[in-house]
Amino acid sequence: MALKPDRNIVDDSVSYFVPAITYGGTRGGVVVATGATPSGAAMDQTVNGAWYIAAPSGRSPVGMLMNDVVQVDLTKQILNPYKSEAQIGDKAAIMRKGWAVTSSVDTTTGTITVGSGCYLGPSGNLTADSGGIYKSTNPAGPLSKHPLVGKWLSGADEDGYYKVYIDL
Image 1 (tube, one colour):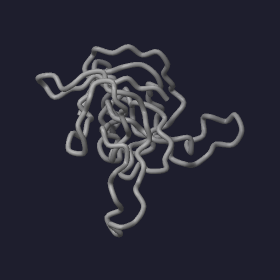
Image 2 (cartoon, one colour):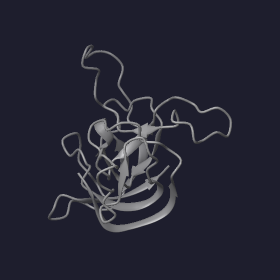
Image 3 (tube, helix red, strand yellow):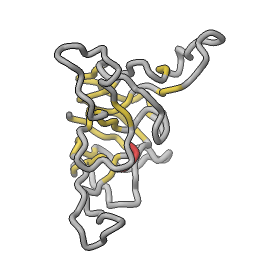
Image 4 (spheres, one colour):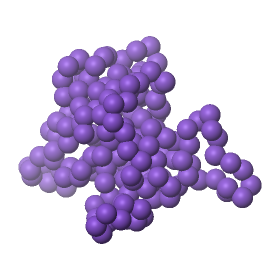
């Protein structure tokens, strides 16, 4: 999963820490707030985090992750400046509004139509499914809801990348 360099960032944020690599640390997926709330205006508290999550239903997406999140020993090497990397536990760039070309797409849960809604699916992947997936433990139970994060601007290119507009 990754991003192509073709993008237009209208609004981004470096307010959230990425405390751990969960479900991959590659850029191009949509991250959600950890749920913990920092006190007052103290936005530099590590509880103000964002990451990929397996079950996005009921969670608050904050934007598309624009950095690869890696774990390296900074006493022996540096972050690769050509790969736009961020260290685990540091803040990462998150696009809140704009468009990008990403391969973090789940194509198994619906048909992607240009102009239709783009939703946050499992593990930060984007999906065309608005939440028609039943709970695995109770098939007759209530539907889970995938948060709307934007809309599709293209179908797949020859490499399996989609252009998507994010508006959070």
